[in-house]
Image (cartoon, rainbow, N blue to C red; front, side, top):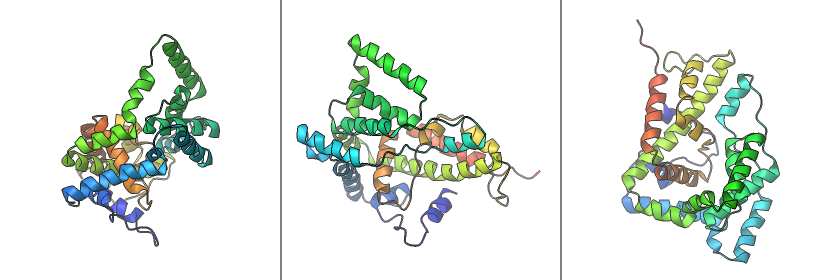
Length: 284
């Protein structure tokens, strides 16, 4: 199923050819030499450093250059598949984070990647924008962190120091290529299949089911079963664009996040469950 979805998504006229990059081939299960795979992973992480100006080093001038880029960037909150389903179900709309909060969160993310001392409020806004936390919950988090910091507890910021780009590069190099292959494959498979499941499931919830001719079962029941699995929320903000020139970097960071969180088997379990649930019921 996922191979058909991916090919369909990348088949638009004029789109870049999906599978031309070594990272994409690894994610598709196509053999890639060890040396080429290692170079591709290193290059993707280095490209993120160039994109955000993290490779400019430390110091006031480097910090200023990074934050000048942030001010010029478009302030767009990530869109989640759960937002679509909640809208179809008629639930209350979640408040959209302001452009100020999004830029604050982006600033926190870049400072963390650069290994700088990130502003606590920026880091919280980074997490809040991605999770679409309501203001009352966000205020509680801010207040709780302030109380902790006043008592000498800086665990939030300290814990994020492991997310610096330099640290990510070390972990990437220490991770075996077989683990990389598994993480890249499951990240792409889950996010590609979840597009298909979320859209068709939303149509079924809205009373407009799509007949797949008995080849697959994708309906409200399937979607609601998947929503009980923790990976549903983890994969929610990730909408993989197969024609994006940034796809190799997105795949690399997504897979590395799975590896660092120790969640590889959890994601593989989720994909197996997704495949099993979408199989049509056998005829009596």
